[in-house]
Image (cartoon, rainbow, N blue to C red; front, side, top):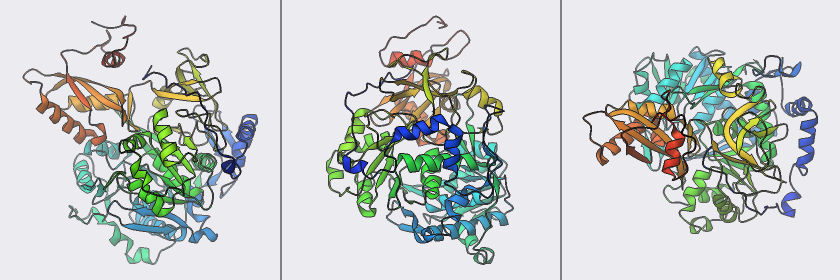
Length: 634
């Protein structure tokens, strides 16, 4: 189906006796039994760990499956639990957020200070006419104002759509237009690898292609001159200093129904159009809070660092909302891990006393290239847990991470989940024994399976389709404005089961091994890119008649994009055109989408119905058997 199964190493890695003596959940099996025996009772108990304006009448309503509803009748707002409840306790003076910019700037926010900024900006949004249900697009670097903007939007009942700051003009334009956002929140720019990313310039170009939102709010971050259109563009710092907000440091949190929308987040699909995954206030907060506190064993004294970007679901769930729901102290860093030197991350772990580091296999493999000397220059003894997210981690990277960063004492929580699931679905609990490269077992309450084409469970060790058999609180509710696509994409192949779109296998110990995507989505450095979107971007170049893209294994990125291009008459293949096409793709879809290799070909393998057979291209590229070619046109 994909890159081939990851071979399970024979050895288990066991947590130390000292570590086990301090874990919050010493018996993971008991928690799983509780959730399996009474799914609704388990999630009701976890929901009661949070505050509600009014209790729910029904824990889970499956009457309109697969449009499941959780905590029906309950009244809440995620900001009630992320901020409001903390500022009424001693935690008001606890650090909520520590931020360091790539240039070395440092800013900190207590829960009290963060709440004050959120209230002020919520009042700014209200003054612009933003109301419950309105959409707000956030296109920002990794800076505190991103967190403030998300929370302020949620506080007043509006719906945020965060777009990753590395996305291009075309990607941003499409997301603004589809969401019909009334306000864009951006910055003059951001820093990455010592360079400035001109975000405001990209916003200006995107707004030339669509019906412009009423207002654009711009954070001054780099200080570079940017175009400010009178009557549309406003400086964030000036709005926050207006008498209106200075005299209104309080803003009532909007009471929301548990099923009211919290955010939409666009993710690539198998068609040319990205799909907007919709999450709600009630179930999402319960699932994210439970999984973060359980899987990462959070304690009051911890300093948590998730290295993702808020523009991805990992950033939503485990940079912004999860840590704040738990009342934790979270660290955020703006820039790249190797700037100016390959020890930037290790230096910050030492400087801030980070105790839990949650990052990607791509980052780990990238840092492995620089050897052990860089981390060995720093005191990493504050770390007690490590985590991995975004793609399957190969055993070699797992072991390097465990040995050189965790110093052979930090368990690695390898988590499998998706934008659609909202929360961890397969992940170890800290008291479990671990196998390098395996996500271990489903989280309590999650029933997973591996099935064949007909939906029949496969034998132990065999590869098949990963499915989920029980609903969970943080699950997506629908695809925004396209409920039919929601049903077709996730629930139609195997009625009653959620199709994850990944291939996997389960070993004799019940541990799951995620292998990779089975549909036409490529994960590069953990970021999902649709083949249709990529091919469409190629064809938009005047020289390209047809294109096909596949993902192939890459030492650093995990998967890299390889493209096969048929040129129009009159165009000559060559290195100059290769570079031109790479630049074009970077401009259309963002730098992450630049292909590793472009090959000019006279034809592409297609079915008789005209569908490109990408598996044939992948097999040929890897020198593997091409499989059944009965549907091949030529």
